[in-house]
Image (cartoon, rainbow, N blue to C red; front, top):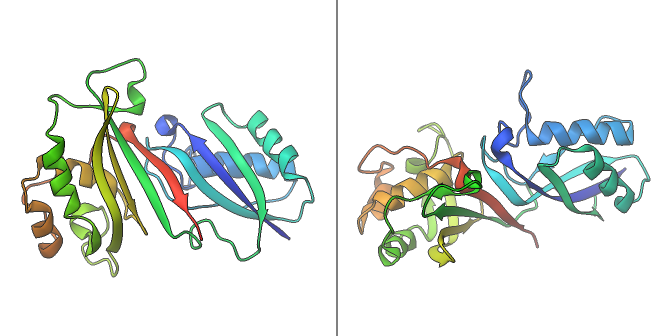
Length: 238
């Protein structure tokens, strides 16, 4: 058996997230597993580094799987891209040691959230902001997230979840042309965590984020940010 690693990008607008689900639900994992089974002529289970929500995109999702086939990676990658929908692309593929696992071998992930000043024809790749935000204030609030904290206030996990602790390595806002970009990297992310954090930071005053991390609850009710602006940007490995 061989273990193969793939780097994948996808437009999440037409999918119910990354993870395969029961029933006739279209997911990125399901699409890739279906095509791999056709090409390799054997059942394949694909493990992703991150379980993106419905409508969330990826530029650098990483996935791994095992196969008994001896097909070369260039030929396999070409075959996959020829059969997958245009909204899913295999950007790279290579053989890796047998103990590699896309999710459990990862040291960290980076997400980016994009805001545009007004709706455009490419609006599904960026959310809109009504007023130009104060980046200095946003960065002060975001800096309160850095470090190891319990993030149950910013996720859809159960309040009784045994482990909502994550280590955030960096969180910052910047301008990129007309767009505003939020970047955050951490060892792990909880369900819908980034989208809740984006909403919270946009509403926060100085000290609100620290208080929410300590009490497990944000001062006001939160609605997660629109998934259209969010990308799984990169996954880090040793």
